Image (cartoon, rainbow, N blue to C red; front, top):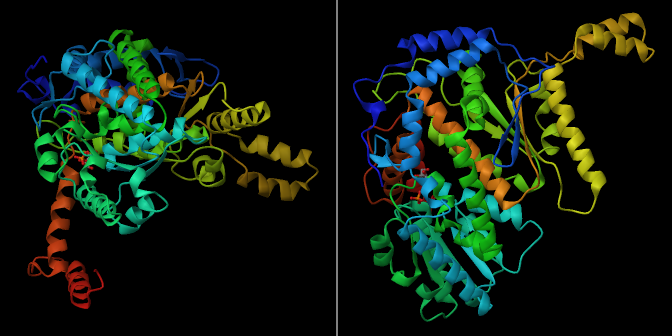
Length: 531
Ligand code: F6P
């Protein structure tokens, strides 16, 4: 692994607001409208990324080049892809791209081989009809996404995912499964995550209660801390390896995908890796103007930091991609939910947006009204497959029509005059029409991307996820923040540990709690309601 010093953490780093290139970018962005009659579609690793619904101009393109140069984009991209230290607050690489390289280094190849062999053996013995996958955040969302995307029609093995510390989650996760034919997969990079360890303990108790002599034989771990997992009781041969240079939210590309391989196929894992690797190549080689992650990053920065949109909506027009929304929520918000730059100073402009969404067409009947006519609005990423994998072409045509129609409505909008004419044409009385037309106006000019996959293959999904990863890297670079740490999550975890001991009565109630927390801790501890 190449390990170079982080330029973004060094003395030459300059705050975004101090860069003349940022001032020029800001000014160009405010004068770059969406051109509804201009088509801009980028081709990336088999995906069509239609960015026609974003503002553009030659001046913005020029300012983008200058801004990226000021941020040493080419050198930093190389550091990322070569395994340099890009996560400067934890002094680590973020080398998830190595996990999906077509020709990986030995230690990665060995783990891939071990995973394949484990699945082959289990398949040949027809073992593990049920899998309980225990893990949270990055040790959960990617696997859920893949299993739902490719196992939506059911598979020979049934998987229950348990992430939450809420005992109901574990109860549901175990219910209906025969303990004698259930494999417990514990995925945790750190192997210290409270949720995963508590849920893992419940799973072991469940196996023991069923009379299983050696329950650890039915547990496998995927972790960067093999030492901790071994101490926990899991045999070495059941521990799949991760590395500290794999960020938790990128661990989908590692043996964390064992569950996907067992539940759907090892080919799914390999296909996703191949698609992601193709997107890595595109990101590394495509010129800036044609580089899909770069262009998506830039319009995201314009939307957030210049136009002031506070959120980004993800609208996958594919039922199988429901889990894409939480997956991207973690990827985007854990990466970009920061407001100091690498020098420790405030960034000075709004950074990562809140990410939210739901598959279309459900979303249309839930919150699209707000997107169309609400006072804030949000940029939308529409994601759709050209071809479906079911046998009802009319359904797919309707799905495509809805996706295109919603996007067009956001882009083109509807003027008062158009609305009025429609009311009059429908035979409405003029006074009534004049009044009602106000309610039918759509502002239009609301930004969006349309990402078209040929079909939902593992390759295409892998490429899609890598597209977002690289977009986020570029955004972090421009804002000057480290997208690879997550210090914000830690504080709450520490407080929860203290409160848990207070509720259990093993430590006194902290006198420094705020009034409301103190009230509830005292009440729940003394009344034993929390037990
Ligand atoms: O949410 C914080 C976090 O550290 C994530 O980054 C990570 O995906 C998740 O917790 C789970 O961590 P681990 O894999 O170490 O159990």
